[in-house]
Image (cartoon, rainbow, N blue to C red; front, top):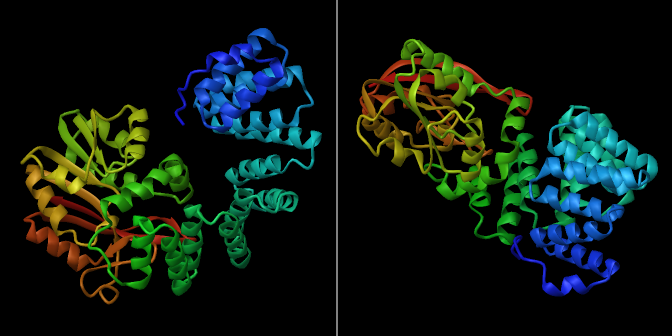
Length: 444
């Protein structure tokens, strides 16, 4: 139901207890604006009612008014200091604001009041995991699932902690438990499959993706990953729907996850581009092709008269917009956009985006058309050995493509782009190993 539903007129005739019950019903139905309004009415006549402050704070947090939610829940705690659920939800809104240590304190207070509050054990585990205290986090998740064996989120979180500790058999057990408890939560299948392929158990990963597809036959991500693991019906690039779906789920945690992986592509691209762009005099037309959350923006803004980003993911573009670095952000497919206008760009950059392309020829031709004479294309790809990819590129079980040096040079030559630099680099850490790639600078 819509979150903007108005409170029905008959709500004004309810007793306080009935009004609270009705507000809770609205909240559970997802009619958050109406629930917020009704809790406000309740507090107008009963300002010392802790439950109303608490539940209104929870609703307001769901409406993304997190600072206000903190104020409301703190009022509940002030009125009822021994209210464990309120302390737990105070921790949640603090964690949403990145105040991890304060959040941990709120969860610990909740658990001091009610040691059997499984949600608080799970939430405290999340704060510890964010601090890379994985042993301590795992202990919290273990307590949560002991208290509530059907708590799928805690099983997933425990699996993730075991992954970080390289306790793979235990992680597999927890993911399997989670998909049994919640078979239509498809991100768990993605994680379980990734754990299998990360340990070179490719056939088992493929079996997970087949199960996922049996439950969600239209899933572009499951289909893409199954092709990546089996080598059957491999597309020449990840489809638009695959990319949109994948990054819709990933946008919220993208920057945090990549920081943990020592992600270097934006800095590498910026360093290489700086050698050909001249002084930072805000004079260039620059396109960030596959801009994602805008991690390249800060590096290129000083050089740009106009900095434009294009990406298939609306959610990633929304994150990029928060940085306030781009003059325009375009929702679209990069190949079509790069080549849409001839000689439009002085510099086209693409950091860790062409890994979702197998055949690079169309995007190189588009870049040739979109670049001005003397313009530069700077990008990264993941590296394949010549024996690993006889055709010049291959898809890997994780769903990304890697390319040989000879292939990249060939597609650049075919597009009449001159390679100025092709340097082997480490792009990031994945599964405790460096991901090898190429950093490429080419000129029109």
